[in-house]
Amino acid sequence: MEGISFDFTNLFSPVLKGGLTKKDINSYKEKVSEAVENILNSNPGFMGVPFESKWLESVRELKEWILSFESLVVLGIGGSALGNIALQSALNPADYNNQKNRKTPRIYIVDNVDPDLLSSVLDQIDIKTTLFNVISKSGTTAEAMANYMVARGLLETNGLKVQDHILFTTDPQNGILRKMSRDENIRAIEIPPQVGGRFSVLTPVGLVSAMAGGIDIQELFLGARDMCEKCKNKDIWKNPAALNAVIHYLYYLKGYNLSVMMVYSNRLYLLADWYRQIWAESIGKKLNLKKETVNVGQTPVKALGATDQHSQVQLYNEGPKDKIITLIKLENFEREVSIPKIHEDIAELKYLGGRKLSELLNTELAGTEYALLEHERPNMRVTFPRISAYNIGEFIFMYEFSTAVMGGLLQVDPYDQPGVELGKKVTYALMGREGYEDLAAEVMKKIQVKNRVIM
Image (tube, rainbow, N blue to C red; front, side, top):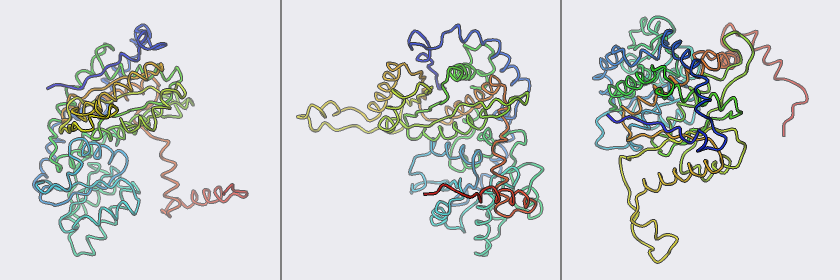
């Protein structure tokens, strides 16, 4: 099966004035080889996921039950939601939930505690024919659990058995949800304990909603497996994930603090949301592996072509030289629209007649690519031959591995997220969670400052 491809040409001199050279890359051959070797030896959880059939089978065992519902509502946040959203957006049409001939459940993913968002979803479903998939490894994630409690309250108010309408995706042994599962006989499916949330899309975290939405989860795995074989190669010039990482690392050292992912496909666009989390949360760190303060990280930004050519590209071309840009191209769209030959008496419009929208969109990508190069802005291209579960699986694994290599180059732990924890604890404290009284008092004292600047 034809895979995605990576074109790094516009990152290198002499094509890009002031760009990297092959010598620059080769000078990091040993460090990159060491980073790849460390990943292979430490075998982080995400590496084994596509080769472990138990995750596919655990989801398939629930298939008949899940497909018996009219709607599936996923309750999660961050890594428990962004992958789900990206898979549904890419591999199902935008009108999927409204299709009359649909034979699988409608899919809703609630990834925030915005009351308007949750209410709008609840307004669209019949709770009697809805399954709620609650995703939290610990069962203490405030946002997911708050939405779970709302859903459970509605089920109980309507006289429905919780066991018939809730599925937990959680730790196999520990945590509140696992205990509830045992105590109340609520179905639960495992999150591999060694896989962190942002690396978990190919586990049951993402596979449940994917399978429910008719996505070929076996093909997701096949794409990830094939990409994994490429990523194991210690030759930097044959390993797209390693090459991508070292290029971003070297540009970061040159002051390119922003990594823009500009996607020329609405269906692929939300892959950039998933990328933003894995890149930001994995490599944005205060401390390195030696516990030295380094405050490193490259900020990921998402953009949509051609829409953001009219809002962002001016900045990318003529603003600060602090961005490395990845353009995502789709060669073959699932559907096509031809522009009719009208207004042939107007020269400014005549050239569009008879052309296809896909042709225009990809020509705009080429225009952006050319302009970036003319303005001496480093850019690369990732090309999808088509949108398929196989190609999405490739993309996901490639960026998981690239993130891990980047962590090795920056000498930080790409699998933790200590910077998130303080905000969580403050939320617990201010919401009155038992055991956080002292922190609540400290926070209230600090935020009740005099001379606040408010207009």
